[in-house]
Amino acid sequence: MTQLTIIRTSPDPEQQQARNRQHRSVADKIRAMGQARIGAALLLIATLVAILWANLSHETYQSFWDTHLTFGFADLQLDFTLHALVNDALMALFFFTVGLEVRREFAIGELTSWSRAVVPVVAAIAGLAVPAVLYFLIAMGSGNEHAWGVVISTDTAFVVGALALVGPRIPGRLRVFLLALAVVDDIGALSIIALVYTENFNPMPLIVAAIGLVGVYFTRYLRGGRGPVYGTLAVIVWLAFLASGVHPTLAGVAIALLVPVYRPNRRDVEHALDLARTFRQSPNTEYARAAANSLRESISINERLQTAYAPYVAYVVLPLFALANAGVQISPEILAASIQSPVTWGIIVGLVVGKFVGVLAPTALMKFFRMGELGAGLTLDRVAGGAALCGIGFTISLFIIDIAIDDPAAQNEARVGVLAASVLAFVLATIIFRVSDRVHPSQEAARTLARPVDPKRDHVFGSNDAPYTIVEYGDFQCGFCLKASGSIQQVKEELGDQLRYVWRHAPLTAFHPNALAGAEASEAAARQGKFFEFERALFSDQENQLPSDILRRARELGLDMEKFEADLTSPEVAARVRDDMLDAEAMEITAVPTLFINGVRHVGPYDARSLIEALQASVRDDASV
Image (cartoon, rainbow, N blue to C red; front, side, top):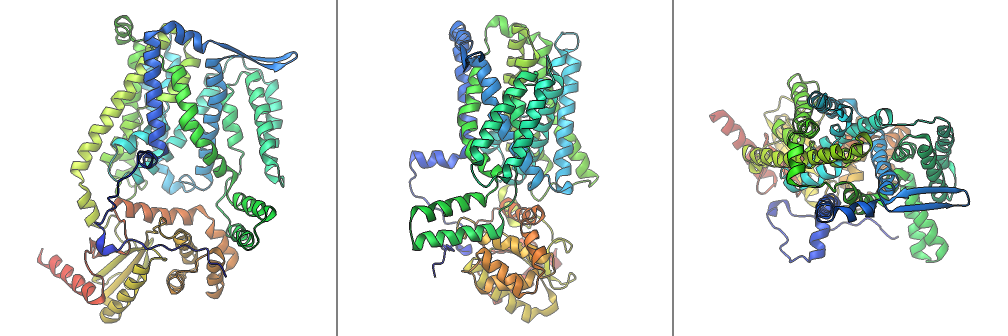
């Protein structure tokens, strides 16, 4: 029988300092940057090109983007400028991907659990309100105080890219916090565009849009050919929004919110694997198509669309938008007017100060009053750096300038404000992160246990009053972890009730493709009080951890299979494993098992005798302090 589980040699935890020093090609280095950094770099390049073009030849810049294009046939025709085509049509794709992310986060992501989401949600709401109030107070009397929407939104693409460039060395949990915040921020910005900046409203075409959206919802039930149906309905809905006076980009959001999202079902994955085995044994076109379709269908449409369109948005749509909208003229006269303009200063203060205070202040208050959890390694000084980055309000800020301000001179002053605020926010964040890294050196974070043992949360074997504690970050497919489990069992036999053992997840997915599934399955078993029994079952047969093997073990342990399978796909289980993985990242755990002896990282051999000596030494050290 063909075994599809792939297990490569994982890094030896006793040699964690070894690094791959091979020379990498330029292509490898570019790929290693990741989509966020590349997208942010292209956005920045397009912005600089637009500024240079607008200042070297403003006439050609204006005339190029004012070029008219006509689409249609017979009496049905649409007339667009290139500028409108980018802002009204291409940006609908951007808002579509934003809507997909919003839908995903509320269905299976960070915003499924109120206890985890409350801090970024409150910070996002304050981060919308405070900048708007500051802008309104400063711009009052200018005639453009209604353009307060310019300062409400954070540019997620730029923030994620900037975080990768200047953020703390271990940005994982801060990145999750900022992404959750950005989702709520996007919802607020989109709502304000729809409610405040819609002119010449005509409700009749929205009836057509509503019918189209109902069709989008029910398209999920078609057995095949969903792509063309989604595409056709999307065009109809977009045209209906355009005719109604509601900004047509919001059609992208409305469609995205109706696209189904779910975590992969184990049975669907197993069926796809069976078809792949069949194709391997008897290669032909029919089996190939069936296997490919089954693999594709096991992933939700939402995630498939995000994967498909995200590169186009990052590498094409947003750079084109910047090229079409960031062409601000910079001259002594314009700069002098901007320095005296309440619109410019309202935007700068709103974005740089308003976002910083709006995000950081409620986060600090909620931490002080213990109304929410920030997570291990996410200190207030690092939140401060993230709050400063939120002042980069580039994409939607420029977008709202175009629809909220009519006067070209005021538009120019507003664009100067957005560009200046983005630069200042980036510089401020860089300074905060550099200071934070000095205050919290990585060696200190890596040495001590980031999250104290919590009997209500952790998987604990032994008495909570035990003088000795071993916390293990491990991977159920790792051979070294299997070896460590034997050593820890010997320690338990010798020390008895004096030892408390805690397991936490750190699956090395780059080496063990099924490790994450095993970790989530153990959490599903834990919901029925069988965590350690499931752990032993996984360790007993490390090379067989396919979905069918996981379900078989659950049946053998007598678990309620209906509940077990439901828990396997629940966002709570995924979040529990992800929290452990983020803790591991914060402590720079790159190899497993990584053991903590009474809260301090153990370095060296992990045979039973060495562990007992380390445990006893840690108690002596505590007693001597």
